[in-house]
Length: 626
Image 1 (cartoon, one colour):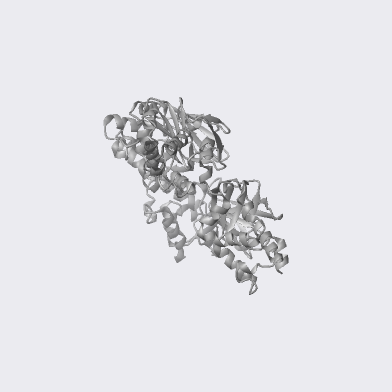
Image 2 (spheres, rainbow, N blue to C red):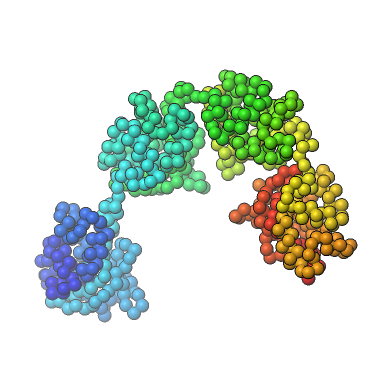
């Protein structure tokens, strides 16, 4: 039927290869959708390096597949182009249909793939039927499954080909327990594969004795690593995510179970630590199973017990070994009240440990009298430092994050309480101020307790009372910031007791425009207002006062973390502002241009200041200026 048609030479070769020449030369009639040579070349490209020509179909299974593919192109009836009609058509490959699909004035042919074949020639008459040429080899589902199978690697090869699983591969090799060979075998297996970041986090948690996977170098340590790795492997099944159920316990090769938790956020895997791993990438199919990429190294109880038996550092030694807690260590020493010795004792203690940046922020807030911890040099100041530091310590218990609950009050060694808030999975710790600390690193275990690293120095009321005289009010804060000098001039020029008001107890929230913002406003106002001094009549001063009070919220110190998107904020002037949260914080006035908060949460003794890059305009001012 197709021998005399030159662009179909590969189809002819395939028919001969599949031993179908006799069948297709029989009486028929047949209709053949005949792929061109280019279509066969495209198929070979898809199949990859193992299939460079039709000769590479050389096993019984491959020849049977080729035969079924060819039969999928044959209809056991004579169908000319005039006879074509949309719908499913049975093929000579029993149980498999092709679909004739209307496409404009012609038709295309649909198979089990997502790509249809175009009809490139019709009604090539033959003695036993009619061929129509097409530009694609039609693929039944069996062929699709075969192609997908060719593309799958073993679990180990899949991990080797994935950059973010390179440490998992290193771990399999380092364990030296035949795990690479096992996971290259037939399987099937299900593997929960931790990312590089997950292994890095584990190494950090293990401390200085494990700086890299190469430190698992003794028989004992390699056995420990093997227990960890086999806890990530399920033998005998390829469990895809659709096979998992909430609360399902799955036995691992290590012997203990992992538990599946299905949440709104996706699939989580629970180990013996109480901290779930998130499945970051599910259902990575392999030739011998399936891989689920997770963001945490899973630890069975057996491994936790072994690690607990190893030598953990005390809380102080843990802090000394952590670069970002060096200022905390300096503070413990500077306080000179036996705190180092206390936190080196048996305990148990829970310590909320501020980072170096948190202490720097505290010193900046305290002003010029406290440029470093060395400035806590009098007995009174050292006593203040002790008050602050002991407010971060809970004695008598090692409270891990799993022991904390939302709204929980915890008594500290200093005597006052801190309040725990849990939001979106993050633990926050509230002190006597209006700004909570966030736990940036939880559950750092020590031999005598646990450390939670936080991003703010906690302040009890006793410390706030002692520090109140040293903390400037809103006006004093503005006077100390060069870029707010025009705001200070405006407050004075308005002559409406605004300086006295913003120096009073408050609390207030002030959106403070920069000098550049005031310059931009003056430029917009035109030649009548070259400087703030041009607001010199009673009417103009009243106008300036309304403008300034539109930047003030009375009765609350509203931190940026307290704002919600499109929150309405009432001002002293009477009109409202709106908070816009997206890329940072913007403040929307009655103009068409939002102000950006360039510096948020400047704490003062009587409120909070947010520096903005635009002078906010209420409708009253817009009306007056136009």
